Each structure stands twice: as structure tokens, then as C-alpha cells.
Length: 122
Image (cartoon, rainbow, N blue to C red; front, top):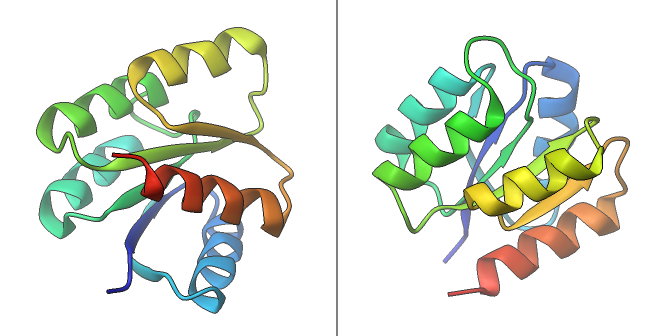
């Protein structure tokens, strides 16, 4: 069964790049979100296996969104894809429940490694 992924990023070109990489590698991108509230709504509606999420999006911050998604859907895996690579952000998102943190710009190999690793954890 294809793993279902939601992409949450406020930049359309980043969403398109992530979608291309993921679909070319056999994943099903079930939706996209341009902000944290939309990401939360789509997680509840679409029930993806995994979400790639930026930290800095309009409306809510990424930490709040991670906690809200996991409170509603504890089985969803979350990977942060962000240019905010400062150590305190990385620790904060992992403590909030994200499985991994990928800094922008990222490589296809790093993205796929993070996705595969997150999906293989219980």
C-alpha cells in the first residue's frame, strides 16, 4: 500500500518540489497546505501517514501545529522541512513529537531517508 503524505509549506514551489520527489519515489501525496491551520484541518480530513511541515508558516507556528496534529492523530509521523536550522528549533520540534528535521535547502536523498525512517518507526 502506498504511504499517504501531506505537504505543508507556505511556498508553492517548495510544495511542488517535495511533491515531485515523493511521487517519483512511490509515495502518494494526498494534499497540500499553505499554513498550519490548513495542515491541521487536512490531517483530520485526509488522515495521511506522514506530514512534511515547515516551521514558519502564516497563522500558527510549527510547534503548535505539531502538537495539535499529534493530539488529534497520534499515529501521523511528522518531518519538519525548514530553513530555521538553529539548534533550539531542532530540539523544540523533536520534543514536540516530530520524527526528523531537514534543513533547507535539502537533497532528495536526505528527504527520502527521513521519510523512510519516520514511516518505519512504530
